[in-house]
Image 1 (cartoon, rainbow, N blue to C red):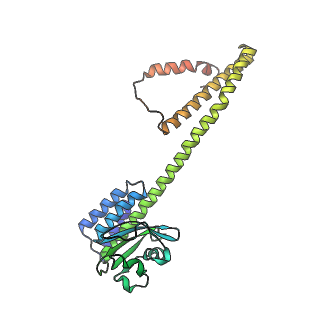
Image 2: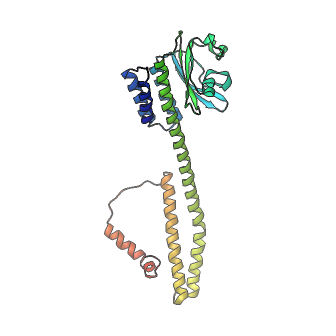
Image 3: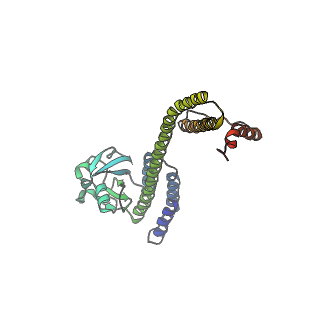
Length: 284
């Protein structure tokens, strides 16, 4: 994300735009904060404050595309705007910016046919700029508004475009994180279910082998086969118990208490436990 910001700033420096050191520092601070977020709500909180700081606007809105609608998710303004409302893409300026994949710069909202005047009459807005979040396939838009006639400067537009670029990356990162989290949850659920399902048949199999041992005795080829089966059942039970432990730890049902371990004694005990299996060639 930081590389994207640095690239955007480099492009701005090669143009006629001139940004202040404070603007650069504010942008770098935003990038640092966005790198740590894990939810869309955190992104919105950071971005809508930064957008107003960077543009000295009287208000900003954070808009997300919701199917064929624009959802005005949040705002930071001197007066009420449209927080929580949804409008068709084709009937609002944020939708225009997303559909046309470019910024809308409006000095006088009452002189622009793209503006739904009735929706603006009850607000303080006289001028605005609306920049899409991710130009190639817009996820939403960030709008900056002024209570007096104001033609957004190239610097203000450039800062908002850099901000929307970093916002797009942050949203993609959050979506990826949420996807991985959901996949891990499904994996953990599968492991827990698998462990319980495997445990159910082990008990009757173990009982059956024990009956065979009592009926057929413990000597000869049959006795050795029964003993091998018992060892394998014991090994399988241990694996199932380990799966259940993993599941319990994942869901916070087991707390780990660290303590010192005598490794020599641990190895000796392990060898004793598996001596027969080693002798029979089951473990090597």
